[in-house]
Length: 136
Length: 233
Image 1 (cartoon, chains in turn yellow, brown):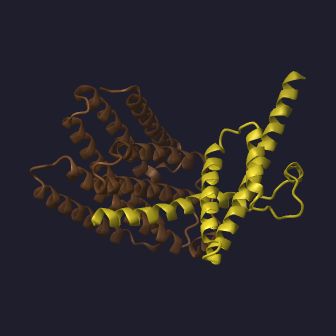
Image 2 (cartoon, chains in turn green, cyan; image 1 turned 90 degrees about the vertical axis):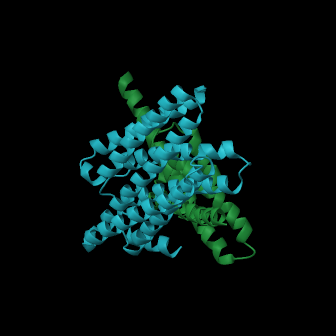
Image 3 (tube, one colour; image 1 turned 30 degrees about the vertical axis):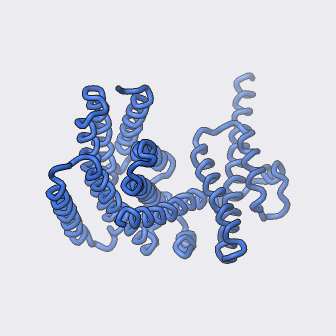
């Protein structure tokens, strides 16, 4: 009896804290303004970045050279996105409020991926400039 | 016999724990995170001790005694880290005296509870008992960390580093408590896989703390509005 109570409470706590941890990573990118360059590369029109853009943005992120310091964040947010999508599918017909919240969170994940792409593009441009400089 | 995987995990864990100590020492306000450094130093020594014990005695009862009881001691030491985080989160409220009294009460209660359990299980101090004891200690950690997270939310704490250290600690405690509770519930199912969870999670904790110390600066703050949104969610 006691182990099952401990297990249930711990699972609930784990999920809540994991979500908060992923949200704290996402929060670091929420106020970052996207550059025109990344909008052009990803083909965005206007300010909104949709949930469906996440996969495409992540593919573009993986095409860029790695910065070495964002790998863990991208994996954590990727896992968080998958959990949210699963939750969205389950709750979309039963609890629309939770489905709407998961949708907003997924949009934040997409924004995070766009910021990561922007940073990687800047990094690869810096690398390119450095290489040109060392040749000259 | 020690396999290459055991050796690799032992050394990886040891190096990561030492790296956390280095991160704390390199930090300008290293006194703010002294308990974290001391805990990780002790944890690194415990990892070395476990490895030496495994080499000397193999996967025997001696190794199990050493592993589970040093793990329980390290969990109690981790409570000191939580209390330190409480002090950091509540430093503006000037309640250090109450926190110290609370700590003394908590440690005494844990000691008495453990004594009562040990006294009752004097004849079989290994096997299910140690798993039960670890499960209870980790669950106590889950409750303490969750309460601390609620305090952070309530006080609208804006220090990202403190928030991330607390969150990672909570994730570590809850994942390990789940593993121990499942080992208690299903005594014959998946024991070998579940036995690896505490080791994997302690390695993850070291990685997450290194990440926090390296990537998140002390002066970084979360916008209050974002915290309110988090609390409402």
